[in-house]
Image (cartoon, rainbow, N blue to C red; front, top):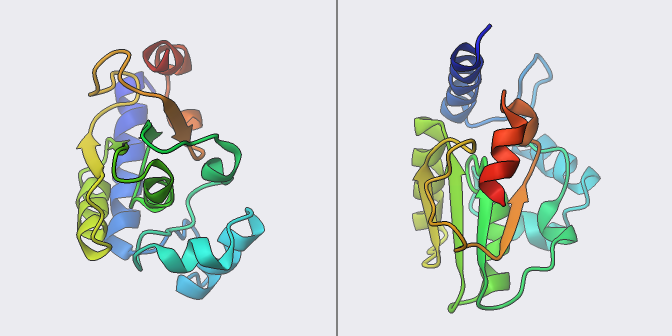
Length: 166
């Protein structure tokens, strides 16, 4: 497969996940209860899980980037592969009203879901942009902190991702 074919497979798979409103990739009888349990296994607390809009935690990550990042008030955070917005929503109160969170995802369905979740949660300092993490739709030198939750591994050209990030 060439790079474009790989990206199309990823877009299609994650677009379908967004439509199902579940992160299940197999036959595991997943749902919101198991999404919360999985998030707890990754180190998210009950407060984290309950503070975000329903439907934003699709259990697609493999870590807890907001817990290990040093996000400060007033900063601009970029979430690579933001999906339905879970980690972006957790970063939002950390940057506060003076800060900003930008979520980037290449899947139309995830961007739509994240934007809907932002409205449900009344987030005013988050923007979700459609884009490729190998060609970021943000200005150079405009980001203070970058978070990502098991998305860079899906990019066919990781060198380009890191080049864009820095």
